[in-house]
Image (tube, rainbow, N blue to C red; front, side, top):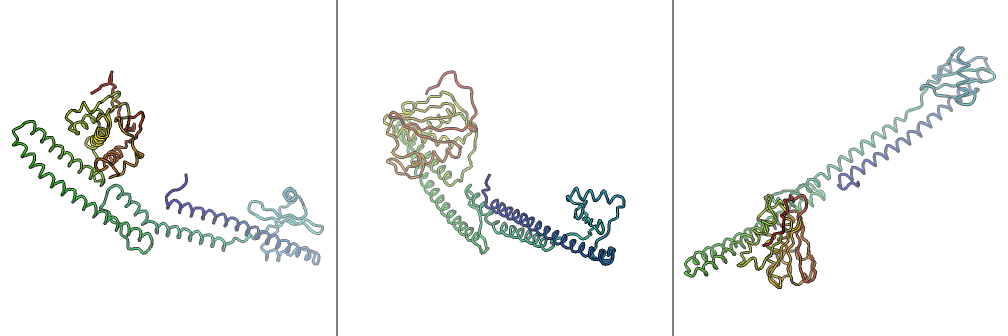
Length: 414
């Protein structure tokens, strides 16, 4: 899996740099050790040459010289012959050989004048300067890694702040007094958050003021309608004012959804009950004439009752409004709720109508925008198809939000 976060990428980069540094040190160390062994062998050959010349001149071994060179004569007695055999087995010769046995370095000299087995107690030089350079480079890499991670820490905190902002938390502060580019981004975002917060507060204040001012004449109108003598007219005015009150409450709910200032309360409800409640919200004089409901297989879904009924109500309202027959059919089957009518097909792709205030012949173009926003909250999806003059809007409920009920013996119809 490829690292996605900036911190992970920086960590991988420094790990690769550390690995390359270790490989470089290993290569240089092997070269230094090889050179040290080569120098040691050249010194040994020089010592042996001196011993041979000294023996030719004086007829004996210069032991004092050997001690000065940190070399001692090994006397194994009867074992010398066996050791010479071992030297021959290891080096392929029994005249001159250098072998390392158990971390000790032995030299075999077997010529026409004398034979000796010497132990060279000198060790190859350890490249301290190379080790110091390696440790220093490793520490430098570690310091650079700490410095870079510390430099991007404000970016990680800014990301967390942005996530809070995306969840609707407007009471955030991310201003920084650092002098780098990350601080400039954080300060610019902080300024944008303040402006957005001020705009949202101004919008909320304006909407609330408008809705408050509208409720006053509606209340007065309802009061005056009570004075009417004609019961039919009185009931009609009551329905009109009730409809206006309902619209104002819907506008308030839409404002909360748009500003993400709404906490849904999910509870289990049957899809058929939600549809019935949505039909009641339409306040139609004769709902059975305009809406035909078929339940093939009912479902229980986890939903916010007010929100989901509002979404279904908008689909029904649009279906009736744009239908040639002013009728819609609602079909509930397993994980789908389909609202269909006979009318002209959509001129644009469905996603075009999810935008608020899109071009519309009727209303403000908010119907499908409200539906899509509410379905997103419920993790549901909306699709559209047109076939043989029939428009079908299909709400699909994911399995994790559904609980299967016992299916009815026969499809119900209302």
